[in-house]
Image 1 (cartoon, helix red, strand yellow):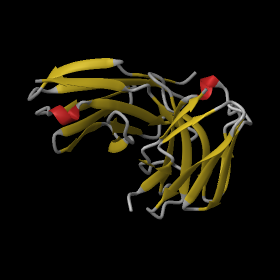
Image 2 (cartoon, one colour):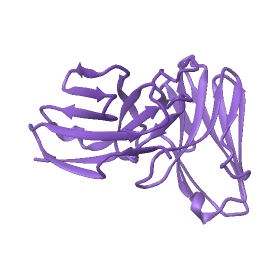
Image 3 (cartoon, one colour):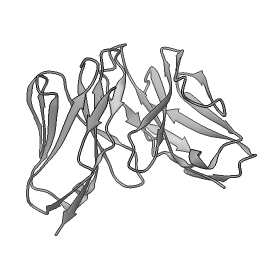
Image 4 (cartoon, chains in turn brown, blue):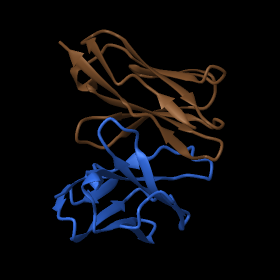
Length: 109
Length: 115
C-alpha cells in the first residue's frame, strides 16, 4: 500500500527553528508538496520538490531525498502565526496525490 | 473575489435531507477537486474534474454526486447521508497537466454535520 508518515504533533518555541519530517512509501515518485493549514481555514501551498536537495523560500525551506523516501520542512525564526497543521503530499507513479495526515505545530511564547 | 469560494461554510442536515455544496474558482484553472477531511486523517480525494473529464473514485458512496457544469463551478449533491459523513469538505482547483505538478488552491471548506 501507499503510505505517508508525519509526526502527529510538535511543539516549538517562538524564535526557534523546527524541522517537520515526512517519509513516504509510494508506488513511484513524481514530486512532493508541503501545505500549511490554519485551523478552520484552507490549506495553502508552501513548496514543491521534485529533485533532491534543499529549496529555500524565506523563513521556510523544504528538503528532499528520493533515495531515502524522505522530506522535511524547516521553519526558522518561528512566529506565533506559524501555529498550524503542515501537510505533506506525494505525487505517485500514476500522478495521483497521496496525502499525509498532517503535523500540528504548536508555537509557545 | 478570492481564488476558490465555497458555500455554505457550515451545514447541518438530517439523514433524509437533500442539499448541495457549491464551489467556484476565479483562477482560470482547468481542474477541480472535492476532498473529505476528517480529524487526524489524510485528505481523502473524492472526485476530480480535469480538462472536463470526470475521474471517479470508486470508493465514494453513491449518496455523494458531483456536478461540474463548467470549468469554474463544481457542486457536490448530498442525499441520505450517514453520521460518519460529518466532516470538512474541501474544494480545490489547479492548473495542471496530467503530471499533477501544479499546486492546488483550496477553498475554506464546508463544515458538514449530519444529525
